[in-house]
Length: 324
Picture (cartoon, rainbow, N blue to C red):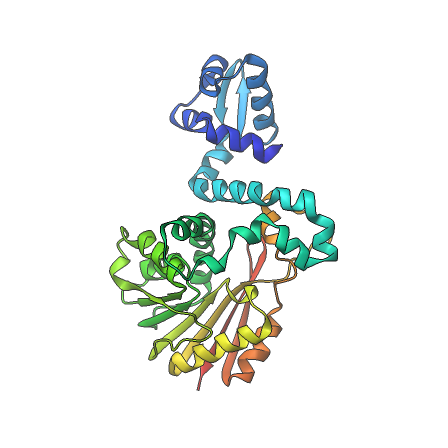
């Protein structure tokens, strides 16, 4: 109930009301929620138990910790919405997920949402359906990119190509930090259409171009200083990831860099998984170890391979390698 309580507080405007006032009383909360006293008290109790609010003498206010968390409101909302979307998959199909992954995928709302088959033909319907899942990936990437920037020096590059670059959010964050960087985002036609709209009103838009292509089959731009793969390779079988890395090698200048930023396999051990981890948990069969990609990089002729492990909500790793 914790996440649903916060979701309702955001949806009804209660969090906005509390953000704009130092304190409110229970009557104001009732009016905002359009609920009776018992319904309001129930929601407030759940929010109090989760340290979202604190109550004293009928006065209600956000906790100091949650006011800080509100700086990441878009991420909070994305994680709740994404988890709510896939929760029925887990509740109704968990045994199938364990026993028959193919059957689970056929029945899953998550894999229906990520319908790559809709990303080739540019139509209004395909754009709108694709935009739904890209909202989630863009928000996650907005924050994950900061960790990548903190662990790799992009100032040495001029021409960057992001294969499977989605909305261009990863490239945008890199360009925002490095004014001389020019980015080329490679993705399927519908994804590129949504991506162009996503970055259009940002200061970095004139340094990000979208190149519509099937990166497994089409010839890609060359003369690149760096080629990046951010949270894409896990979606594909080993023969496809091998092909992606071949494409990267061909597109790079001699001495250029390939960079892989991916989640590590989910390690449950003695920790309980939070509700916000549901979407990532459904990919537990897909996340590979860094060693898997190191072997493929070596097969493609890359050298000077380095690996950094980064602890976020789930562990990530950052692999860089050089084309000779």
